[in-house]
Length: 401
Image (tube, rainbow, N blue to C red; front, side, top):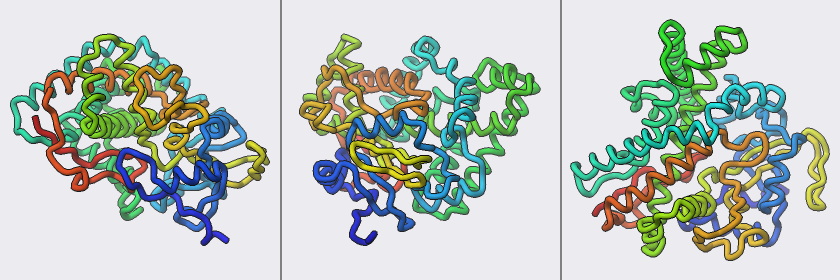
């Protein structure tokens, strides 16, 4: 009976830890059914090995159009029923076709070439904070503008329009609002980017969208609408994810002075990088799980998942699996290897992870060094968190120094 099953997602007790009910479930029943918003009962996976196995197994589809797919919310179901999604929700070979066209733009070497620009952007934002009010909302002053400026430069999107596209992306992702409003926001963003792409077609620049137009649109490999869909994914994911990870990471660090000191005083890249990896592992912001549906019967660790059954791979709790991570609740910058799945796994692993890592590696130490007395300017209980949104983090983060 579905009423006897635990409801997913569960409520958090601490903004920096997975829900206690999820922790208990992972210990007692690492593979089991849960009940989601529409009454359906997909399988919830909490073991690290099971999450990786499913995300790497092509017998599990990412296509939300398939009957039985465990949609995250009424909003996501409504939107996907009425508009074609990005290649993020496609299976191979269609997914691979689109991804191949972008992978060269996100190589470690290409992203590393952005280091001077990202460093300059970080310090310009910190200069503005220094000259501005104290306390300040770190989200609006630093965490959100940094990845927004970077992704705008990369794509060739005017940052002057950031308030518009940030508002539209926030409304698109809101699982608690009116589904029709989320669809409207998505369409408005699509129209904006379509017009931008048509303008670049006439007058290209030195940016990712212009290169796609030149290499793919003019050859007939892509249509302008397909490039628009790619642009939406890259723009929304490129600022929403890193902004929330950065703000959440700062909030968590400020409650642990010894962790702040690690990042503030570190000079070795491996220490900074290790600290960032631990924050990614411990504060997994995709907290609704990665959704799949089985296309054929699959046995997973002795459990039969039948064709047509939905699956939720819970990366946040998998990243604290004691079978893989010794002392999983501890912040250990020296943890090696750190095989977390914060960026997913398999063919759908996050394309932009080199960029997200570099932004975090540059932003966190610079912020803590510039403001050695940085502290939260509000009680944690009074800070609003995005519990109902698929990308988790603080809605705002008042800080002082």
